[in-house]
Image (cartoon, rainbow, N blue to C red; front, side, top):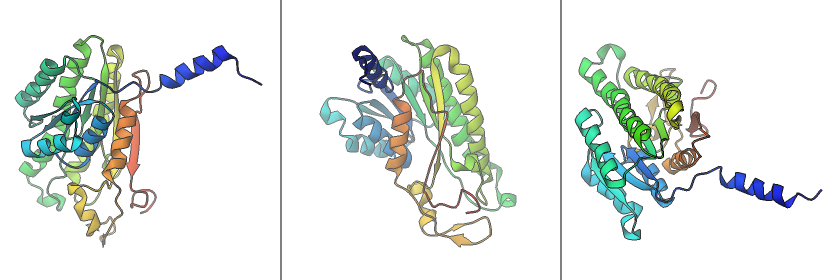
Length: 273
């Protein structure tokens, strides 16, 4: 049966509304100087986002901006050095966004550290705090600042995407600080989702397994397994993670990917490894 012309037009409009246009929208990416943060920043820049690159090392952020090619195309990739564990620097980061662009559409809450691996009984208080301060407190501080901006701006709303990990579901040996913070990230995501409902603030989480970055270099040389053996593990390209984040980011605010898992297909996670 032929489809009614009006029905077809309405269907086309609905299809077009499934993704929001990226051109001119503003994103903050933390940990943008390397790894997954850099890959996501480059993917968003290629899609037309104006991207604020946050991280501790200006030279690394400048390199991400250079690779994006954004400046040469008359758009913007802005490196803003910031330590996410310091409330004053987080406030300054989001003040820069407000002053430069007037609004914020996306926070990719990505900055994180695995910390020093080792037996639980040997983990020092300082090493524990170093991981908690970056992975959990830093993520909270950035999410809080983004939430405030998104609530106050006109039009109201925006999206926060938290970088979780498959460690939010199952630990590796000798990873108690990292695993605890990634489990906590799931609670942060759920609370942000609930508290953001009245203000058109959506929040989702991407749980990543074995993306090839500086942090996962040990996967390719041999890493401790749950059975006590050491084994090389498969990895995937960080660009595959970036494409997933970009998809989550470009949904209209009426739709949300609450949790997504992107992992190397054959890594020892599903089943018994």
